[in-house]
Length: 68
Image (cartoon, rainbow, N blue to C red; front, side, top):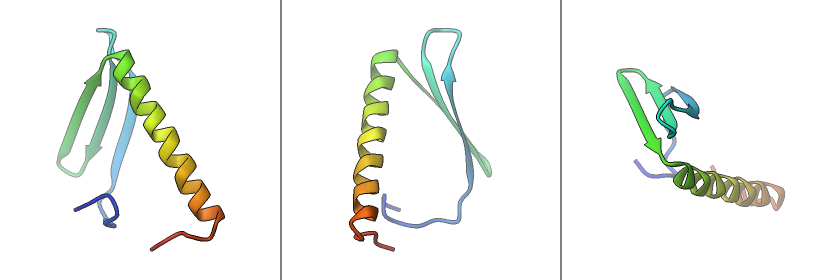
C-alpha cells in the first residue's frame, strides 16, 4: 500500500505531549496500537511537513487537479 492507495481501514489519531517531554502521535485501529514518540524538534519538522502537504493538496484541488 502506498500513499496514493485508498483503504477502508479506519483508525483513531491522537497527538499530545507525554509526561517525559516528548510529543506522541498515537494511532489506534482494529487490532493496531501504534505509539510514536518524537522530541519537540522532530515534532515541529513533522508539523511543517503536514502543513506543506496540506497546502500542496489544497492548491491541487483549487486548480482542478484532484485525482481519484
